[in-house]
Image 1 (cartoon, rainbow, N blue to C red):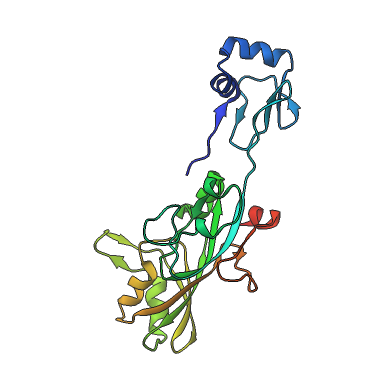
Image 2 (cartoon, rainbow, N blue to C red):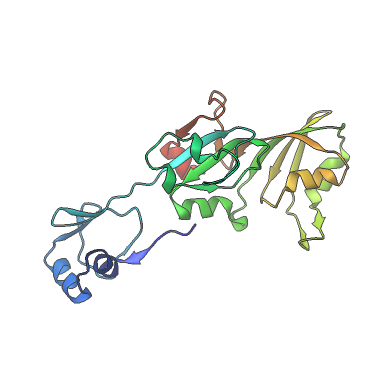
Length: 234
């Protein structure tokens, strides 16, 4: 989801119906405030979180929201679904329908899910060029060994999409458990990578996205706002 950016004079004209020529008059008279400061520059670029007023009348006052959710198994990463409960249904907040999902999890995958109304922030986290790591705990049906580590690190070719995955880090926890860090999010990627070894994934849980780690004490299905440091350092 892209951030909504616009030139100030165009934004005011669209919102109020006032011509751009008359908007310039309002600006020249110091009647427009952006984020509490008098705005006189018609070329000023604002976004959906800029607080804009004319003579005390609020034109826009949307606040950014950043949410951590402990996604349960059986809940879909969607805003609307006819068959299953969605992650939006789990939220108890007034702005929940303005939020979008930052990196979906499959129906049967649990763990950290991020939601926001800030398109630039979500794009930064999910864009492959930024290489933000996503850490998963994986439970396997069959034993794993050291040969998996090199295979994941080398990347795997998926013929259907004609792509080779980026190198992924695999750490063996025990015979049937691994920690996997991905730098991308291909369709069912972890299941398909272990499928090369004919080793079914029987449990998948996302622990972290970048520097944001799921709270150990956050109940399944519960959520909280991210801290300012988490948003900044994600």
